[in-house]
Length: 183
Image (cartoon, rainbow, N blue to C red; front, side, top):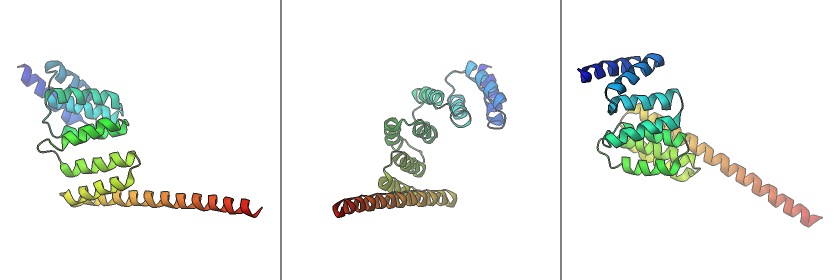
């Protein structure tokens, strides 16, 4: 009976998410009270905290609980890595990415995209571009590939604007140096 009740509340939460957060949270709390180790309920709770409430620390707690129960649940890795990047937990995100590549059935192209975003967040733009290129090669649908192409163009623009700034600063320094010599 408890499993059936748990499932009823879990389905109510899934049905309400993301349109009615109050119903989602109420149903999830009931579902977790019947089964505190419900991987689907913990996963949805982590999503609510990450994507709706932007409470990355709380989301991390739910993802950590989830991983302690089932490390082979492949769908958690992209979301958890995204949370770590947004929370600026870069070393932890890198370690989780490396592990996620070893987990069977993870979306490798999406993991490459996240690798590129992680590197970009750390201002390692050349390596970021390389990761995005790999993601594009491994992409399995046109919409994903189009999104990755947009990421590549954005990072390329960012790199060229940084190069332009460096060149302008270099020219200013040279100009200042030559004007001092002329005086």
